[in-house]
Length: 92
Image (cartoon, rainbow, N blue to C red; front, side, top):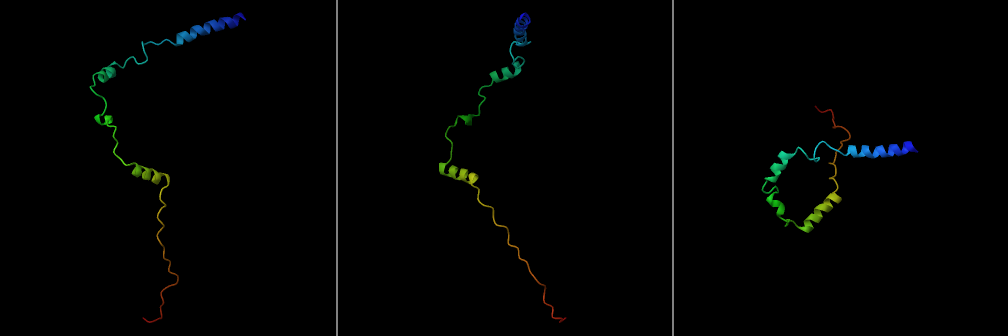
């Protein structure tokens, strides 16, 4: 019983020790990236603010249907098979 209590008490200390890091935060060391992003005037593309999407709902639905049910492939080309040879009557 005493052994179990000692193991439980020591496991709590080990868990606290494993939660410690050598840096202040996990993102430490990214100061150059942080400074460059901080000084960016507007990182987004100006067109990203356009909420009016050009398009037709009927056309978009037709395209979606063509992906869902693709048209059948074209039939294979017709093959002509000639049976028999040329008739040679012996007239040369």
